[in-house]
Length: 83
Image (tube, rainbow, N blue to C red):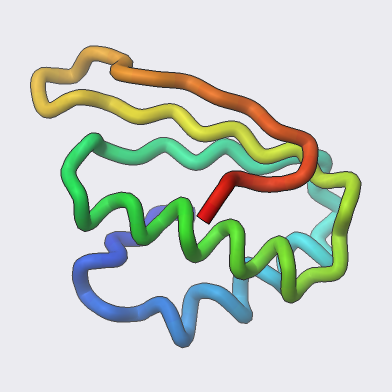
């Protein structure tokens, strides 16, 4: 799934993601986002969706890509990303 939080679609995206997490049979989520501030909204949306889904076992991984294409950071958690 691709989404840009800059365009304010979070009220649509969060419930869709929560449904996918709850019923989609997925075993994990990787958030790939740029380091620019507006892309942080994607991590927020995934965290909110995880809370709404009721899943406590879904590992979440976040990869932040720099504006020049380099990987700036990577982190993985089994209980979601901090908001």
